[in-house]
Image 1: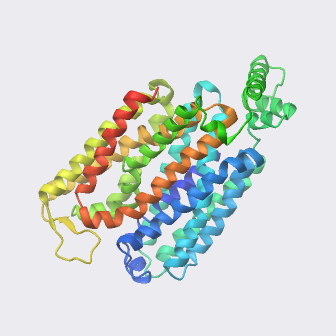
Image 2: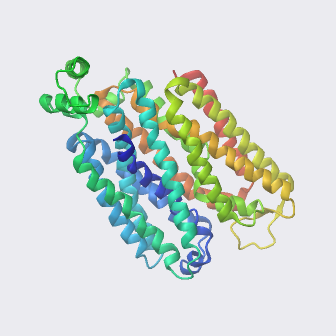
Length: 445
């Protein structure tokens, strides 16, 4: 069940790579006027702008309609956005379509991990929620290969076809969710106790036995938690900022912000630019290998994340990601020269240094692999775990909104940054990883 609802994460992955292969094709550049700098940044970051709006509405929709129904609403919005993008006749319409699709991503990226964590047994909750990150990785890879294959079409279908195909997993998710139960904790929060008991029995036993001792124990535990928390305080946005909850909420927000500042979506969105700057001739093919590695390395985290813990994953990931970025920046600084063709995306390139180019390629692969087993899944597992049920949806929507706000800022700023400061940008993001390591070391339990 968690694997199926993780199609919401696959949509997130489709969003991430929906531009990465296309921006390097002649068909896209020709039709949209070779967008560079701020113009390309506006197109790429439009999805994150919509996601910011979607995630802020997700807590209200998730609490009112249930996690399941709200996710179905999101899939309908996604299909509308995919249709607008694939039919776009210019940059403005393309941006509008990406904003619409982004609203869906904001809703599903917030509610799917909550739904997964609320239907999963506690002992495997981390593994279950980490399926979300695997689905994101898988969605990135599938969409990239669709775009890579379409790049050989010598017409506008090279970019219109991949954007239209994005609707397929959303339709599958929308239809499939009709057969899924609502979250037992959401049912309990609405005093639908009989339905909650039936759902727990369905989730925990082979024959939906409502008299199973383990089922009754979990039912009683949820009931006690709901009643105790109602006596303590009412569910309110004000509690997010209370002295008791302030530290937890701030920690969950920082974890999500750092998952962006580590540089992953800079690499995701603009890996073609980086490979071109490194002097790698077939950057599209090199990127396809990268996304395949991303998917393969995400598998161990599903199996072992509950054994090695959240905090060690964050600490090890931050150190190694910082190292790979510093190495990429240093190689570009030492072996690169100003680009003799100023109208290109990359103003600083490596020429005739294959060893340096291949090392940058290897560092990029290792960076993605490190993220896939550390900050990638843990940044989604950790925030719901440290927040009480009564404000969980609101807190997770706030932390995910911070993720999308940072995603928007980076998606918009990186193209002009890459043209203006080139290799220095990698030192900047490497430093962010060191700062994340220090914060987690001193603050994250």
